[in-house]
Image (tube, rainbow, N blue to C red; front, side, top):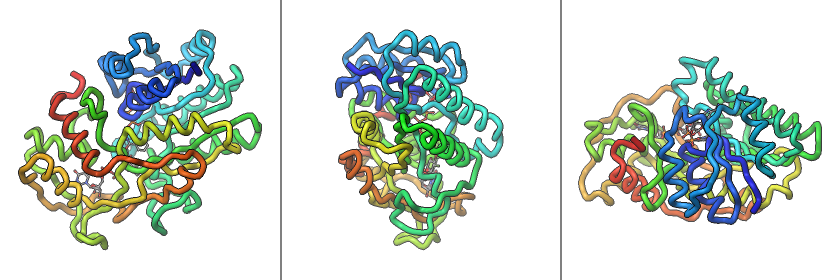
Length: 338
Ligand code: NAD
Ligand code: UFG
């Protein structure tokens, strides 16, 4: 069994990916400081993957000694690097924390990998590196820009990884640019557990349905889209997890640092998502229109064809599955992992 180090492996996307890796015959090693997750996730991952032995190390990726110890203890062949902060709004309030964590952790990780002669990396990038789209669907050669410190950490990390790959042909790096990951594992045992009031659409809707939030605020009704609300490329988190497994399986075929979009290629509006949830729960969701949210774009969806040609990966799950699995998770875990 090939051993894969998964930083941020108890987080939302990391936890689903660890389960998918184990199911595909890999030996994941989870490394997470639990700054945005919970120890309970480890138990749930082990249960879903039917492997009570999946190793978990509670430590910070910036802790050089802790990382070194892991590379000495396990025969790590590749790394998937999820660890980092991800809240767009918060990144403008505490930018230094974002640069320190997102850039700092990556630098320590890369240095450690290099010293242990591990050169295969899958990095969590984001469609946020495309800034405000100038052409749709967005392909990997779309111009890059960032509108907030979080986005800049992704952009700078991509640049660092490109420099590194250009300096040494041993490096094989997949820069996976996710569009909008949503939903949860169909078992309802793992899912997204935002702290406090959620910022993103899916957890906001599911919290409205359970009555934790009185209504859904829809940010903007006058976008140049078919129904006036924002359009995004929502992607089931289990499809995203499968994309990471494909990236690990095909990583030797990459030439340097290669950006790859992970999205479905289809755009859905806020109202499409609301209607899909209403169909599943069988009752209306109270909504109020608000002004546009600062920094939001009208439409954003991927051209996912490169992921298919390089990784043989395509999103499989429908919008209905994204909504029903997201709802199933919320229903079974009203307080998240607490
Ligand atoms: P998440 O917050 O659920 O998971 C990140 C995990 O990393 C958490 O478990 C946290 O405890 C851990 N972590 C943070 N800093 C750490 C450090 N220094 N050392 C060790 N562990 C640390 O986030 P997620 O939604 O699973 O996102 C995973 C990655 O994907 C992030 O890099 C994020 O920026 C990126 N991404 C997410 C989205 C999205 O919408 N969820 C979209 C695009 C890209
Ligand atoms: N929206 C609402 N009400 C809400 C929350 C969101 O109307 O309560 C709308 C937004 O205005 C947008 C759409 O729902 O039109 C999606 O918003 P999300 O916050 O769920 O997702 P974003 O596309 O804004 O952001 C996501 C990630 C970011 C990433 C960005 C670009 O959360 O990390 O995609 O890839 F930077």
